[in-house]
Image (cartoon, rainbow, N blue to C red; front, side, top):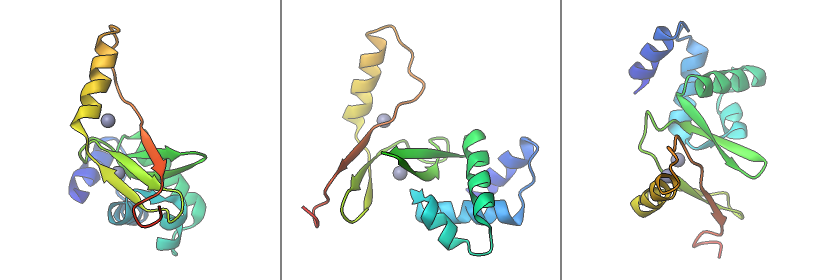
Length: 133
Ligand SMILES: [Zn+2]
Ligand SMILES: [Zn+2]
């Protein structure tokens, strides 16, 4: 995975610097990771650089932002991991990855029955996890 992304960076004309690879490593370890989590996991990288690197990854479609309200978390894009959605707990902040083929099917049907070709969609489920409810 890291090697694949390293090559993609180079193909796009960006060098795979130590800092970029450190940010990538932190994303891989904690995804979906909040910016706060990434910043505290990377004490040697300044805040602005973490933000800039995440934005670069998003621009190159290496990573994507998962929005929940005003905040977002960062994870690898659908090109590098299987497409899925999240259940996010309002109390403890736990985020669960969920794969639901029925949802994907319904979204495709909704689009195609309107003559629409879907490119992407976001669907975040917010509530309380089993421990918190
Ligand atoms: Zn995820
Ligand atoms: Zn989906």
